[in-house]
Image (cartoon, rainbow, N blue to C red):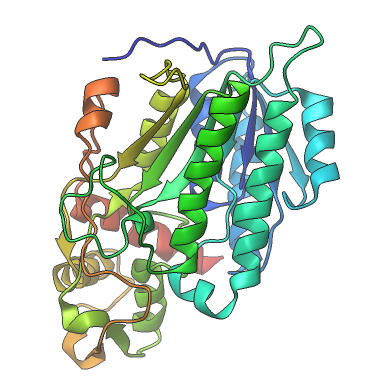
Length: 359
């Protein structure tokens, strides 16, 4: 197991995508666990999905900050990472020691119809962050001690070898979204090699939980089911996903942040990890568990007939049949493995959903 080489107490931590699902939960976790931190949050609050949900997440962070038990501080800036001057200003004023880049345009299917959004956010935005990290060193400044950035299981494309390993070649993406995430990994490696930026890429596998993204299947299915609308099950139900609960993801990120990568055999401080549940679930089983948890939470009635509300359809462009994470490297280096079962996680989501609807 790797030793911790970064003490987060008292650090200035820049988190992009701070109003996003993973970003907001990470902000709360760091405020909860560490003392005297300054979290600088950035998000452009775009309308890819309901902005009120992003505002809700930000308010949760602010409520935590108002508690006397929290010694850290959270400051938020609305802005676009594609705006280089904005990024340079944030780095110049706050000089973050840790950078966690979670801001991105997400969604495989959306990238087919809206490619410009992905080039702007995922390519240009990440480039601007890398450039700011590059110029953070010198003139008596310690600079960025660790850059952590979000990649995706989508980079594995139609790879037939499972479980997916970070040692596998990922040269054949099947969506623009996946291609932009692979480009992030390549950019990060180049900047780590050229400018000594210690960087860690995290390939996330289907993250879910309370206050998650409405475009994800579990959330979208729930919205439709409560309206008595039909849900579409792609590939006729023959899909498997490595669903990973949000608390597990955030715990993993915090462990990673505290261990900046050592130089590899090429002398580059660069590494990539999978973070997934290492237990792919059949989509039909997933929907059945979701239904039962929604009934327990009284979101759906006890006599709700799921079969009447399901339609089995073919595979959508850009989708893959299976996502399955090999997390051996994650376990070895951090002693960490996601532990939340699908039933537990969907139960938490169902209870949250009931309360959120009341708002």
